[in-house]
Amino acid sequence: GKGDLEASIAAAEDKVVADQSSLEAAVAMEAQLEKDIESAKDRREEAEAAVSEAEALREKEAKAFAKESAEYKTNIAAVGKAITALEKGASAGFLQTTSAAKLRQLSIDADLSPADRDTLTSFLTDGEADGYAPQSGQIIGILTQMKETMQKELEEATATEEAAVKNHEEMLAARTKEIESLGAAIEAKTERSGKVGLEIVELEEEVEDTTKALADDKKFLADLD
Image 1 (cartoon, rainbow, N blue to C red):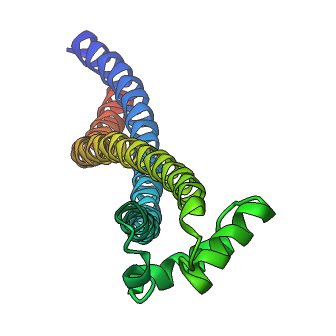
Image 2: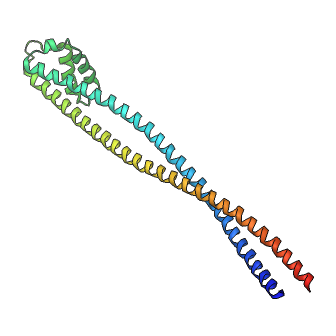
Image 3: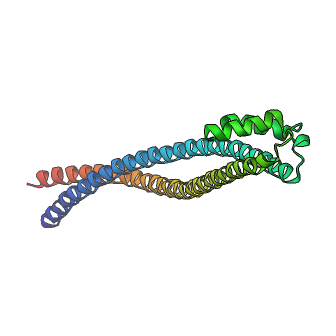
């Protein structure tokens, strides 16, 4: 009867209000999800760019260290050969070698006192002339000090490189984890956004159908009066 129709109209009006409220919430959620997805994509892109940049820098640093390390080892070996030659009294033969040529360059670049540089340069230029033997000990002392300094510098450079490699690997692990986490979030939120999109379509249809039925019921009720 009329009472049932009025109750049905009231229930339909409540339903429209509830569905519209749900629809607004779903639309807001869809917008927030889209915003979150874009933000996560931007952050993932930044993380990937940071990884590429770090990889390029690490490669450059590794090449520089390899070159520096090889140079130190060549220089240390040249000084070592000079010390051995002097200890054996075979400096004349040594002075004809490529190691001696390397040592001549080192004597220019090395951090030596003017007196030590002159002594070393004199030896590398003239060799052990008669009566030079007493100076062999002095030359060996200078060369030993040079060798120890270079070995220490090589150790420091190696430690710096090893620390850089460790830091790079830790950064890479953290960034990779971040990229994977963002990827998973993008996937999950994209899926959720798709479901919310379907909910929106269903709610819109529901509101439309209920509103139409409500209008029909109201018209019917008016005709009864």
